[in-house]
Image (cartoon, rainbow, N blue to C red; front, side):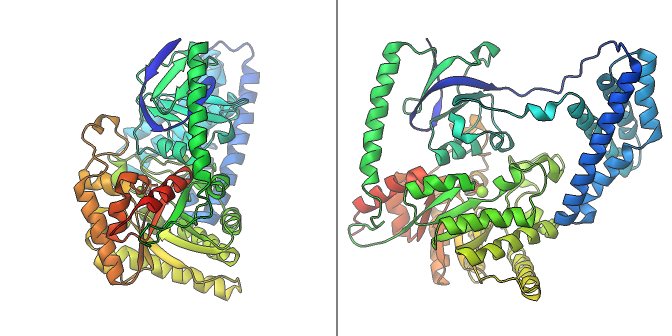
Length: 541
Ligand code: PEP
Ligand code: MG
């Protein structure tokens, strides 16, 4: 038995086989072609398939984000018709008698280099496009797309680090635990593990050797340990711990249906955070009073292209119906930073957390924003929906957003599509928004404080960087004072204020949050009942 240690980001015990998720570079193998003509035929077939994929992408993107933003897929299609490029690939196959994957890679590298050395900025940018079409064709030829992670049995995922775009591909019903060598407490993998209520460890210092694949392991989310090839004694110990934890959980279940009221009568809403309709079971099981944060970007991350209005509408409608009249707050998409979807084609940024993300993308691509707002408003007929906007920094942004949402309502009205007027709120997750919350409070129906981002921007510490943990203080007084100020400013304008960042679940702060007058706490589903327990034990007098 081998033991490794890390930091636990969610408790619990998991037993299962290890599944390694190691990033693979696209490795192009060069080999001698037995039959050059059949290599050229393979090239033509891949080119045809690539054209088909690009035409579909163009069509979908044009509908969702406008023709201007979709034009890139047209450029890619044109490149696939470029005689110089095609001749170059074929020549390499015929002259060097090699496989077509190698020829595509070599010809594309040559063209990309040629574009990068050009004076004209537009032409220089085409270098990335050549590599993109080259990747697409090689993926088609090597069937790499069908290699999407397929799980066949419950596993413990072991990885260096996991991007949200990777975790969304997994069949979550088969994931028993996440263990990563890197990662941080506030990373989205950690948030996902807490939402799923499965044990997870980060910062586990170990070699991800291929021989670990399929080995039995135990993750102890209470003690922060991973055991590979556990012995009988350890398994017995873990079973005892699991039974104890289940006992505690059963006690908490008795709180279902009870009020979130302190001994002296102060009541607070306790809602749940979700990233998918699949999380709704946990929400109901834990008796949350509503959804305080639906991270809608996960719908975009799960998709290989822009989800249509209809697709989004069905998801929001199902959520509203399942919550049966309880409030569901849908946050408009917060793509960018660590949450990347390739089809958005966002530029590589030096500082992505401070870059083009969330509402900034929506305001620069209004078609995309309007599609989402239409879906949200249409779903408002099926339950109590509210909408909130992430990463706000200014009054101008809020005013522009309200204009766009009014336009959407106007268009729906003209088309005779029914909808309800819903609450429109904003996230307070930048120091800028906190500092002008007195002004912003006059413009919106509610505030929801995103402490994950508010902390990273206030302390100037990347929430994803594991090396900052020694410096990172999640309960920093600066953040707490901002929360207090935001509560005061919200109440002065008679709007309600909640916390939907991870800090909302920190039971050592519940008393303080209640004293500040926080009206709602939105936490991972599994944290709802422990929080209720805590609230009921408090006396604020
Ligand atoms: C936050 O920043 O606190 C928040 C709730 O949003 P996210 O974690 O999705 O960035
Ligand atoms: Mg945030």
